[in-house]
Image (tube, rainbow, N blue to C red; front, side, top):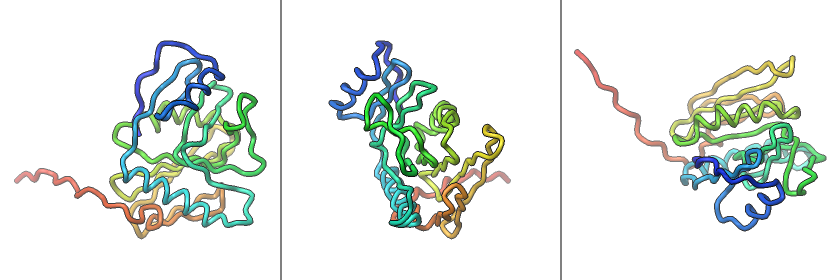
Length: 203
């Protein structure tokens, strides 16, 4: 999923929510400005569905933690932003924004499936927003064109983050924040990857 430019006209949160409720496109709110997000590829959506279901299955029915999809609005109060992570994982009780009960505020884990058009935004500007969320303990990035996961995890002190990787369908990635281990074979189940790019050879 890729992002359009910020609109110059400014709106209140309540005005944005009214517009967003009527919009057929996914919208983000950036401190008064609206950004429209474009559609995603079938591969992107399949990976999102896979990883959300995989996390839910690993957590089980008795867990106080649940995985939610990209239609869930995430309100980042300190930045006055409303965004749509591909997967939100929240513990009960869910903390909801005063503006609307449809906006959540306390994710423990967020997942972003990287697209060619959105990768820089997801791992740059959007990550800066995510690290401002006190409840957040980890972010998982899933590549779309190859089986590859990156885990950004928060340690003590609060702003100390570290990155680990897992590559290949036979690999796994442990997420300590939820005490689960992701299997890349399940994350990428049914995904057809593009052929590898042939690199030029020089004699």
